[in-house]
Length: 151
Image 1 (spheres, one colour):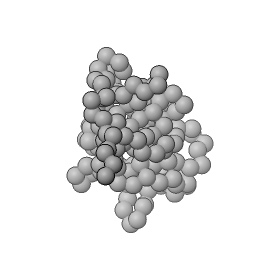
Image 2 (tube, one colour; image 1 turned 180 degrees about the vertical axis):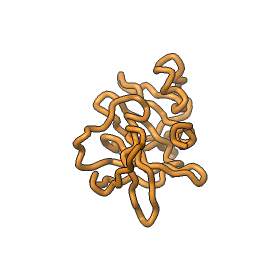
Image 3 (cartoon, one colour; image 1 turned 90 degrees about the vertical axis):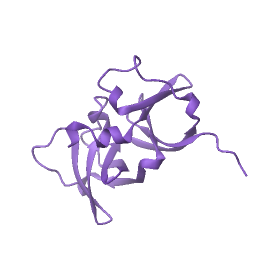
Image 4 (cartoon, helix red, strand yellow; image 1 turned 45 degrees about the horizontal axis):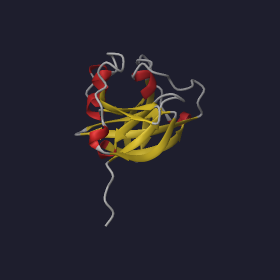
């Protein structure tokens, strides 16, 4: 039996500089969808891309980069890479530039994000991992789902 080398994370790319890890336990589905499948809703904050009907369920889809005050998706994108996350009865779709796959990291490699990132980002992070001159941000899915601005 092969020994696990850490906890599994979905590896997401926000832009060419920013990569994010999302715990797979809260990730319910990953998909690529055409932009025209989203139903735009008027008078919503700019990070809301619209509603997606997926498998007879309706999900809000947000631009994760814009929501986190990082790099937004290209406004003329024809497709979105989306990770649907769920905690309890809440679910939302996180649109990103690219889904890079699943990777594993042991818990002892996780460092505190405090002091390394802007204060507005810290509430949505569980930590960060430094890997080959790059810092990978570990998202806290429950913090995103329970963010006051999404209620």
